[in-house]
Length: 434
Image 1 (cartoon, rainbow, N blue to C red):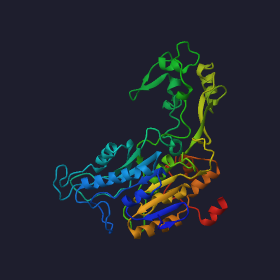
Image 2: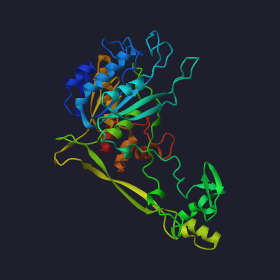
Image 3: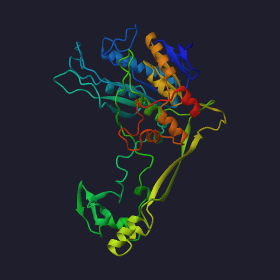
Image 4: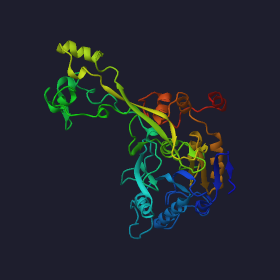
């Protein structure tokens, strides 16, 4: 296939996605990220486009057929991320399709994909804080869309560490959060149950468990006493603002949404011979928590108040430490490595390949409309990496949370995700940064 445009690692293919699917090399794609045209919403002005079928069932069958055709090109470890929004019935009256009916097309698509043999791992709610209000006066405005995560097998590539987000309140750990009167429940012999704080006394089972020397204390895992310093699992509700786009394309999804998916599901390196990805090598250890344990200010304050050293201050509190040691190959080929390959069968304005370029991944995008092919090629060629991400890599940071902290400070509003409007490097700055 002669690409419409290429920069050596990313390619734009012009043509119908159903026809182009068979031209992909078998078992070559590591991650699929796309947002198909929604049914009955927009006319993109090109013959053969998806989304203008006479009946929504035709659209569903056609869309699932595309993913079935793409399946031979996907690696067994591949992830598929599909963004879909719902729509309402219009003039058709046919069974479950009728005017003003919310058609539940994303849900029907997910079930059809399951029937086709794909494994549905997540139904993520992408909420839009700045969504435009709709004109309907007899229902509520829609402010969220579906983002489905499909896989081919039960074991697949997924890097959760890369997309962890800042903890909402890191101090609300066991024994650390202030509950009443500026002191923790441990100090006051109180704890929360059912949302209410109640007096339990120093001899309650909860407090006995906190005393490492108490004869009736139940054995506890040190991991229960510490949070993950890398951040929290983002969960399946993502609040990401749609990004403004100045050119003539009206259905672009924000780079932040794509970035999180590619960081989690797009392997940074794969074996050039067998195609298996490298995986993050983690080291988990437990060290003394600063400010707690023998000799700490908290311990001395309690000793002065109570006239004796408390049992829980006699031993150091543990803090979980997680470090990335590197990336480990999952094969024994001994061959060279190359960046993972991302596919978007509905490229549109090229956001998926822009983010793939930002993350150093290879990419292929299908686009039927020649105007959008030119737009995507121009946009990918001009795309620059955010300064926060380059600064994070220079400091040895490897997660989305770290990159955000480098750019905006940990715990800043919107923390955990690089801003789509953050400053980017000029070509001269990229050369200087290496």
